[in-house]
Image (cartoon, rainbow, N blue to C red; front, side, top):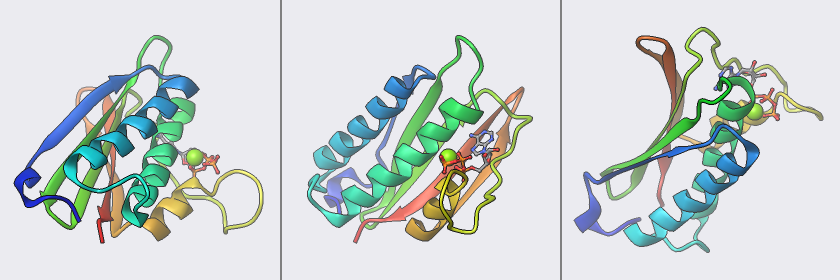
Length: 138
Ligand SMILES: Nc1ncnc2c1ncn2[C@@H]1O[C@H](COP(=O)(O)OP(=O)(O)OP(=O)(O)O)[C@@H](O)[C@H]1O
Ligand SMILES: [Mg+2]
């Protein structure tokens, strides 16, 4: 749970479309949650860190264009849930879970699916998209 005073708050930042940018996005998400009242040692914070890491890594690996970054937004609709959104510039390529939980790559979105209440994506005209997820903060 986060402090009730932060309900309705939104935070967003742009990151470079690089592994370093993805790592920074995860670190700043954990820091933001801490400022909102969920300590880095909490289960909720660990879950959000994993979800942000997967969505940011996907934006960098599959959704970015040279010289273009991605944007991470975090929003608190209430004290028990967090809306995570990652905007990237490639609207023509859709996230598509592939694996069946085996070894190797193609499991990131399956993990996101098990850790979140819901996730999805939507086009962001004129040419980008938003991949979003809802995390429970309990
Ligand atoms: N932001 C995105 N933009 C475009 N395509 C995406 C995006 N995120 C995911 N995808 C597509 O969905 C597929 C599945 O994503 P997922 O994260 O499950 O696996 P992965 O990124 O290929 O491997 P892993 O996450 O296990 O390292 C990707 O291979 C890619 O084709
Ligand atoms: Mg992935």
